[in-house]
Image: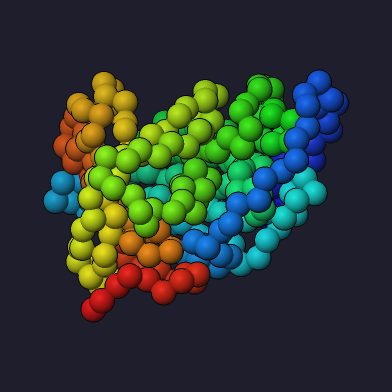
Length: 264
């Protein structure tokens, strides 16, 4: 049923895209060297709110590439649900899907279904990366070349070469989020080794430069630990927010492309 739904969305938007696409100049698609992930990878996380186990999240690359708009694509599904005591007072059931061009590593389609305590978001996006147009739930907008969605940005950034990075270096990813184009900046802070449920892992620590105000007090209130290996897996994320702190820790992984930087 999920695949049928995806293909129906593609069929709905496909014709209208190419009616309008001739007003933009097409360019040759790029090729990104991906040594970080492959089909079949799955990552599972536990979410803590303060001292409370608040939820579980998982993100999986489906087992094979799928055809989308004439291209081969990774189909990636991320889910998050509340658990335990928190689920009785604030139920969360989120699902994100992205279809990423396997050659250019940019999104072709993005599906977002959010239900957080009755707050509902339903969003479908179809990206024409050749002609720089996105159809966002029926609204057609121009976008920069190779713009990312909020899920594909994570996978694209995993392909970066961090080996020679020094503290203070800033990388950026251009993403299309909530019908706006954002330049997401990530500052490299330091190298660290942390203990997790999958073992002791050598990590690179980054600070995504968040917008202070509604959720964060400062622009460095979010830190992310990434495995210091070719996989570049998020191992831990710590966010200090206006109403407490949230931490995400890896619980298990499978289907990795490379040997992880772990010692037991």
